[in-house]
Amino acid sequence: MKLYGYYLSSNVYRARVALNLKGVAYEDEIVDVLKGDTASPGYRALNPQGKIPALKDGDVVVTQSLAILEYLEEKFPEPPLLPEDPAERARVRSLSLALVGDIFALLPSRIRNRLADNLNQDEAGVRRWCHDWVRQGLEMLEASLVGDPATGTYCHGESLTFADICLASLIQVSRRYDCDLTLYPTVRRIYGLCEGMPAFRDALAQNQSDAPSDFKGLHGSSNPA
Ligand SMILES: N[C@@H](CCC(=O)N[C@@H](CS)C(=O)NCC(=O)O)C(=O)O
Image (cartoon, rainbow, N blue to C red; front, top):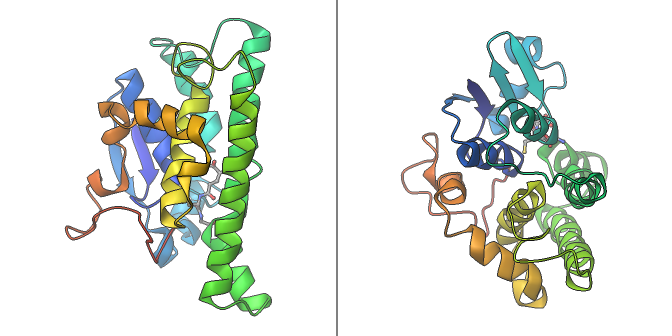
């Protein structure tokens, strides 16, 4: 299996965590978003959406991080990352989509470049935009988790699910944009459990083969993907 990605990408991070949790071996194919590799004809032939991550499994190419998680869940059911009950699965998917569809979609370089080039935002303005959306994502997630009896040790009950992977990816971008996590105790508690696990640790930007040797992590990172 091949994972097309880039060390800084928090969208790719979700796919890495899921592969690690499922114990699926994979090779990295580096696609440098910051150099524009996602727009190259070669990459577009593989993924016409022109985004990372993409997962290649034999002749099958799966794009979009949540579709990759679903694919892995169906192909490698153990350990399960979705509950069995339809209503519970729906809650996990809703939490996941609220972050990936409604927050992460506002952060990538194509959005930041548009703000800078078409709406005359300087670097501080672009960072403010990203900081604000990440903060809203954290608020939304905390509010969804804290009052809901379905929240347990993890986002949903007592087992890891897609929602915890999405939560952990939000923490990665919240570090990049210096958000104050003390305001979100439930989110912070759950990430505290995840960050000790090898599957999450091995997926961090600084632990990727394409990370520069002097890269220490995402805190205040100035060139996010
Ligand atoms: N919804 C997609 C988002 C993927 C995405 O936007 N990836 C960024 C990197 S973090 C990318 O490929 N950007 C390149 C571009 O938009 O040209 C997913 O969850 O996989």
